[in-house]
Image (tube, rainbow, N blue to C red; front, side, top):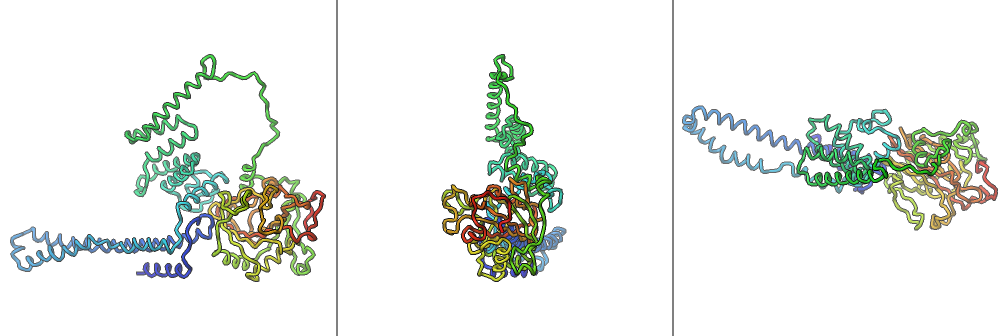
Amino acid sequence: MAADWRLMFLLGVLLLGGVPGNGEVYTALAEMEELLETESVLITNLEGYIRVQEDKLNFLKNKMDEYQREHSDASNDITAYVSNPINAYLLTKRLTTDWRQVENLMEHDVGTDFVQNITQYRSLLKFPSDEDLNGAAVALLRLQDTYQLDTSSVARGKLNGIQYSTEMSSDDCFELGRQSYVNHDYYHTVLWMNEAMARMLEEPSNHTQSFTKADILEYLAFSTYKEGNIESALSMTNELLQLLPHHERANGNKRFYEKEIAQQLQLSKMKGDDGTDEMPKSDLPVAKSDPAIFDMTERRAYEMLCRGELKPSPSDLRSLRCRYVTNGVPFLRLGPLKLEEAHADPYIVIFHDAMYDGEIDLIKRMARPRFRRATVQNSVTGALETANYRISKSAWLKTPEHRVIETVVQRTADMTGLDMDSAEELQVVNYGIGGHYEPHFDFARKEEQRAFEGLNLGNRIATVLFYMSDVEQGGATVFTSLHTALFPKKGTAAFWMNLHRDGQGDVRTRHAACPVLTGTKWVSNKWIHERGQEFRRPCSLEEDHGEFAI
């Protein structure tokens, strides 16, 4: 009964809150939290289903025990038993009305209402889709790559050596491998199918497995082949055929792999004129690269910055200072801003205590109902569209909507010395599972002719990024060419200029949001445009010299 009341209460709360939209819940952790409410209702419903099934079985078991006792007594002396008119009546009753009642109960599915409840819940509760499952899997693999996490450690619930959750079962690992396979990501398919195999051998008593050793071997064999290791693919296929000799697809693959290996052997023998496997050596000199040059791609720099492995040099940090500033604003004489310099040129600063807990809570509450998948602007069409390299949900809050937003916008003006009339609305963002935003510019480049054309405010001259939560691990804002990382701290705000004084984009401000490893990341930002800043940050034909804008 207690479970029924809890179920009714949860449904009432959800009905009062409206019917939530489904889809893409993995893109914001704020929406992932709602899935726990869904799970709570389903667990309560399952408890009710099991209870009525157990009541039915207990009733039938009691009847069976009663009938067995009577039948045992009758078997001792059948003639004496049936000659008793009371016994004769009871025997007849058991085989008519009693057995009819038992038969009806056996035929009746007492769990029908609970099964129908699940159908009803799908229109009331937030359920993840197959897209969400795939998105969550890709996010976990992204975290594994970015932070160089060991597969077996992740499966044990450890992230960077810290135990966060219960271990993954062989089923969980198998599904992660299968999702990788669906995405043609054969590297991670091999990693997680191997982990599923290892865990399956450790779980002999697991009766919920939805796969067999043969299933794993089939995925492993083909994925290994796609990675170029035909010999291993053939070996795994032979092992699979030992389990299932008549597996049609495996037999076909075996013939294919054997043919491929034979062709490779033939080609290798044709490489050398003398019939050896060695390639003839060229007489041309081999150019050696300068060992002093370290050719680091942006992705590698991005991932190293996310892990905290790449940092500015001591000489870059030596000139940086922390100080109180008023920026010429009389009000700030009462409470100066706390400024920390993060980079000298381009000038990037962090303001501490730039947003207060009460303001953060209210802005979060206002943003939640408006969350939509965060978009990027198509450089050709100018249209806004979703992209796999930006996983988050965002909402836009207008300045006049609440005095708190007005206060935050005024504080932004005080921090930057720029006119907020040409700034975009306050964008609030919550990152999802492994939420990230790959390296990008905030300003529009010359070739992006249609960017911001509906605003008529010019290019984005500056960015102010408020951090509205602490993040346990990950989630840094990194500037890939500057080797600078800003790690989220609740209440702080980062500020930098996107444009040089001559109006050209400063490509050094290219930055990215690292994946959130653990915790939740909330940010908000103000993108400030050129119009109205003519006297606040005058144009110049001279090269910037790293001086603060104001």
